[in-house]
Length: 213
Image (cartoon, rainbow, N blue to C red; front, side, top):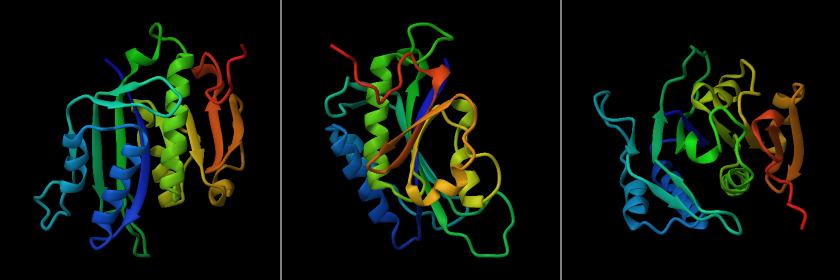
């Protein structure tokens, strides 16, 4: 089974790490997560003290989200990863980053495989991205498939590569220069958190379009 993910990122230090985890916990509460086991797991993750320690953790059980005014969506798990070293060498000291991934089985988002994502899935994912992007303002929030994972963040953090590697995303206005050249096949809109874009052929209906009665 293929897996998609809803991703956001935050820079951090060892001192700010607990506060960033707390912010993600608060964001999931805003998205209707009431599972105390999940919420406690997030803030129990520890900063690694040696190279042998885990650099993050995975919650490998279903997590139910109920975004406001949209269909409930089930995540198959949550992955929180800490990146303390850049993938490419740099002369400047780069911050550590935390990646937050809501994992979703693609089959529940599509009526058939392969097929565009359903209107209902688009509504829920779009609402989740809006809330994430409002609370994590450095990079934005993105819905990606397996091969697209982390690529937008790496492009922005390492200042190299193509950022248009997502099916649906919201990026802050301050990053507009990174996304200046809009590829064919993408459609955009303006949101409170920045600019939203979707790959047209991946959706039955643009996720931000309201259904006419």
